[in-house]
Image 1 (cartoon, helix red, strand yellow):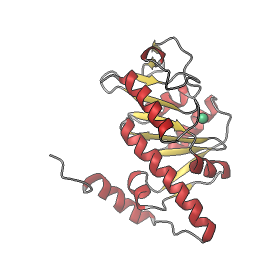
Image 2 (tube, helix red, strand yellow):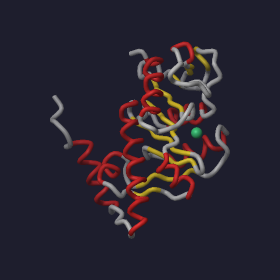
Image 3 (cartoon, helix red, strand yellow):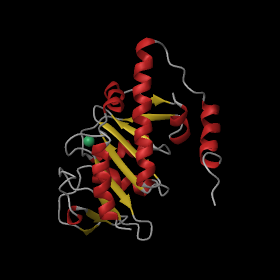
Length: 214
Ligand SMILES: [Zn+2]
């Protein structure tokens, strides 16, 4: 697997899905065999990024390869990979509806069945700190806990998953849930899915949904 190219392709996909604008947003993907973390450079257009622009770090955060300045959220990515061995990719985005809740400093509860299945009971807001700081990185890891996503206040989202495709699912489902929750709140009081039902749906999604595994 060409992880450098996968990071570049994922950056363009993030842009195409309108999960961010311009050069904002960043991605890291962990190579299972080596534990190396491939991460986007700071402030570069994904359309013009080449494989040489991607940085590679080991699991302890030491630079293995690359000469560019890394994403300012590099430590957030590396610390999330360290805290969550089940996670193979991390994506930080600035999508509109998720950011509305980040601006309000509101946690997002399970309001749609797909959110319940793929994300869980809620997405928490991390304590506010300036972008790119170690304080924000620590707060985001803490608020992520065992969840699949976290909101950075006045800023955007960080979503995690077992691989980058999974992260795109989490990010898209979170953005849609935020849009639905926002619109529902405009005309009434949304019903939140009970914790027990969320637990049942998570088990269903993990074991019974889709075609049988061969
Ligand atoms: Zn950002």
